[in-house]
Image 1: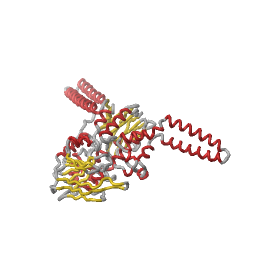
Image 2: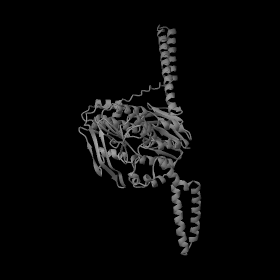
Image 3: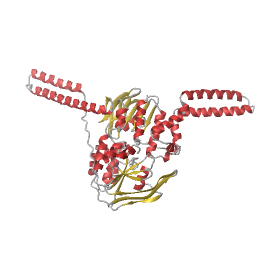
Image 4: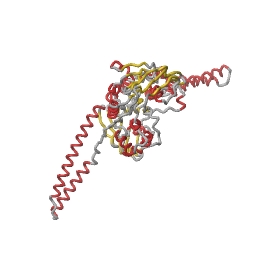
Length: 545
């Protein structure tokens, strides 16, 4: 189904994968796991033929699909209606077009026959036979269910009728992501390669996707930080770390237990091997006399050590999992009122997104912006940040406020610019050693600082964006999905940092556990802009965020 042999992947001077081989059988559901920056997304891109490998071979099945972590929309696609773009993903779309052409030929031949044109009756007969054959093939393939299936998939991932009738370019980032996921599932294929398929999905849509993937006959290779998906829909794990892969059977939770047991066994074997080699070396020292007998015994012991070392093979690299330690510096004290939003209205070409929004944010408070996909959460955050010009109303920052904005699309991280250069721009006057130290807190060490930021994984871009916020020393943080693409240890580190942050936070997030533990003070429900106190009763709404 998918056969990878002796694969090597280089990224600049970094070796992300070396001499890796694995095979996925038909119908298997396999998770690719590893820390942020290990190369998971790069491996998926290489398998999907977006990047050439440095060595090895990849054999793909006849039909396969690929969901990228970052959705890029061309100018042509941006002008298409979302529903039409979804329908075009069906493998039956081409046949539907051929049937329409056959109908046109029938009509034309009928007109010619009525006009007495020679050969029209033969052309009509041929066109009818062609149409009948195509129509029967289309019917048996489920073609007349095509639109119903498209609508079912769209509803499953959380795209409503209103979103489907809009141009793709006017959809929010979350809606475009859902549309691409629906297109991939609609197109089908023997192999589905999925990079973070549940990003931007609410709780109901996540559950639907997990159940769909479990029931799908396709082979699935997925990168995800969604524990529910990893424990419900997969049956094997490929772990990527230190440029090597290891294979495990079972769910993600079972993998964690097996990995710990395997590492403990390796540690014991390494210790025992070291003890045995040390014992043999001591025995060699007992035969120091320069006579033939002692020389033979020393040679025999040396040979035995060499044989043991060869049989053991190269020692597995000790896994060094750097603990992520994120700390925001104590912010400069702002005024009592940090942010005042008055009569804010914003829309685009197809109408208003929200109207007449009013709220006040006090120093030290955490506000959660909540609402359905497309309700204007990101638009509101960008309007507050000054990225969007508003149609009416105003945003007033309080006294001594320094604003930091985290964008979920990472458009402020530019390809062709190094990681450390991005930090230099955010923290003028901060020395390079200090910048590297901050990167190190996020587990981004060594050559990563000089790497082109455009080549970073989604998780690494998230970490770089958060590092830029720390350097900027903001006392008001506007955060749009700050946990997307982060592995569980990194999410915990970011959560702890925000819990101890002394400034003010305005947040958009789909991560229910993260929001629950952060415990915001208030909620702004979009698109109405209604202000509510956060309590346990609001958690049902968080699933709709």
